Length: 123
Image (tube, rainbow, N blue to C red):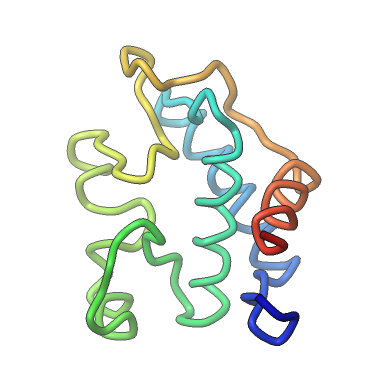
């Protein structure tokens, strides 16, 4: 992959907004980030990138025929309807304590996110 083919990362502003939202939402719902924080980092980066590109934090873990239409419909905007209604997070961002993949963290730093996503864009 050449430098020109490397996907652009989310802006610092959107990344901080999604990081802050994710921490607050986890604490408010009694959920936890995945025990593998690299998953958390990639999901938050994806949400932030969609916020930049679409104006809404569309779930980055699904395929969409029309991302703009899906963002407007809001069903899959984070927190998505399944998460709000049943605490079911397809992305493994918000996990209940009985989930075998749930970690103990409800916080992640910008540095942790950037370190993970910087490495992902280089491979």
